[in-house]
Every structure is written in C-alpha cells, then in structure tokens.
Length: 370
Image 1 (cartoon, rainbow, N blue to C red):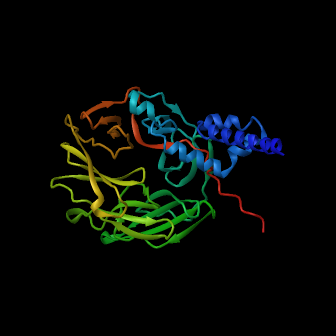
Image 2: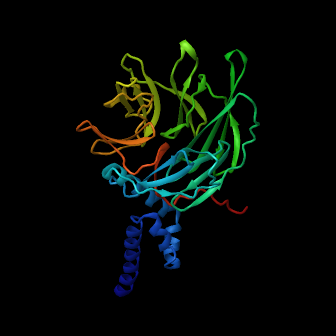
Image 3: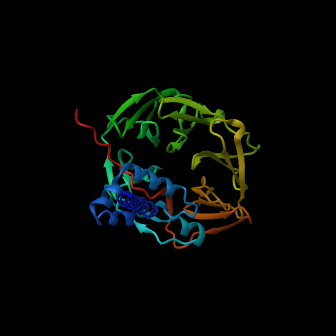
C-alpha cells in the first residue's frame, strides 16, 4: 500500500514540476511544446495555465516577456522588439509583423494593449483583436455606424475581470452648426460577440486619442469648451457598470502647458509639457483619490525642441529609467543621473506601446450546448 501511494505521489509531483517549468517559458517555446505530447498540449491549453503564465510574465521585472510594438513612417508597418533591449542596450533588432489586413497603403492604428492582446484599427473602421505572440486574430463585426460628414471616431480597449471579458468601446463624435456636437457610444463584448449602444459621452467631447485602460475603466481626456475657454478633464467609463465618472486632477504648476493622458501599469498618469522647458510626469498612486497624485519626475528639454514634445512614458523601470517618444525618436531618460540617450537602429516612429507575450486567445470563449 505504501508503494502504491508513493507511485501516485511521484507522478503528481512530476506534473507540478513540469507545469512550473513550462509556465516560465516564452510563448514561442510553449507553442512548440504543445506538440510534444497530448498531456503537454492539454496543460498548455488549459485556461488556468494561460492565466498563470500571464501573471508570471507580467510580473517579471527584467521584462523577459515584454515587447515594444511600434508603427513606422513613411512606409506603413508594424514592428516589434524586446523591451529589455530597448531599455538597457539602447538598440533594437526589430521584427516586421504580419498583422491582419496588412497593406502598404492602409493606415494601422494601435487602439490599446491588454494581457498580451492588441486592438488595432485598419483605416480607422475595421477592428481586430490580435495576439502578436500566437499570431491569432479576431475581426470584430461592424458596429452599424453610418458614415457622415463632420464625424470622427475614437476607440478604447480594456478587460473586465469579473466576467473575464474583453471590451472595445467606440465613440463617434459629430460636429454640428453653432459649435454643437453629438456623441454616440457603443461597446463590444468579446464574450457575447456583439455591439450595443450605451449612454452618450458626458462632460463635453473627447479629445483625439484612444482611451487609456486602468483599474477596470477606460479614460479619455475631454473638453467642455474650445477656444479661449478651453478646459481639460479626465472622463472615465467603468467597463463593468457601463457608467461614466470624472477623475480629479493634480494641481499643476503655473505656465503655458500641454497635458497628455496615459496609463502606466495600473496607474493613470498625466504628462505636463511646459512648452520646451520641461515635462513633468504625474502618477495617481491610489485610483480615484485626488491626493494620491504624485509628481514622479521632471524631465528637462536639453535643446530647443521646436514643435516636438515628450510623450507619456511607455515604461518606467524599477531603477528609474523612462522610455518615451520625442517626435519620431525613442528616448530613454535616466532619472537618477538626469541623462538621456536615443535608441539606435530605429525607424521613424509614428506611435508605440508595450505588450506582454501571452497565450490569451483573441477569440470569444466557446458557449456550452443547451
């Protein structure tokens, strides 16, 4: 009996060790490992393993499974490279990506990144949820919006944890006579596979940028007025409740400035550019608490920037390095010694974001038979 119990324990321990090793491998290796045997295929395809692998990869402080993805100009393309190489080697070995509906004359817009999935828009009206690591993609159905003059469209992409669902939000804004406008907001559920309208965008009109995902909500910079009475505010959309709110901002220093909204990990952030003098990064340490806004770093403009400004950082390392875009260049700013270096071997960049390699599927989960 003792020998029988031992024989059952050993295979169980062996399987736990195998899972522990596999969960630390990169996605490319795991895709090959699925062909080893039926057991490994089953282990790697299991939703619990997919989440465990994602959590370990996300928490890796050396960015072993993190990548930078960027769009290039003048030739329209998407490329990807190791985030670690960018942050610590100041050079890139970028790979050209075969994204859905790739075409040299069709624009591509990166809406957002979440759990290894990217939402991309082709020509601003064809949407995909795409996993660059597994090369799987899912084209979203058309939302039903009718083209009309004076209309522009914004998107946002995020994850609703309670229902394990990915959501895409579309905001269409139509300008009318007398500085009036209408907004129509639709939300797509990957789990349900459909679009639906929700309440119109409140507090004015969103400015021209994708929604920033943080703490289960998407966020847009918005303005109630334009011209001399221009106002800048942060509007949130809770993806679970489908309700809007406003995020109170920090008290900025006086001076002529441009504000840009962003997200770093789970924290909302605002980059405040003081017109060629300096850029200050504010981070909201506790979501929704105004007093938790903290000025993390002030980045000086070492030369006359002309029309170029710093972007919101794509990444901040534990040792104080910030990865930012400056014009069409990528810059690593070291906050500890106040030095900056330009990334070498880098094409002109239109936009960029980071993502973690994952096995998360862009497809809707299969529904059980009734």
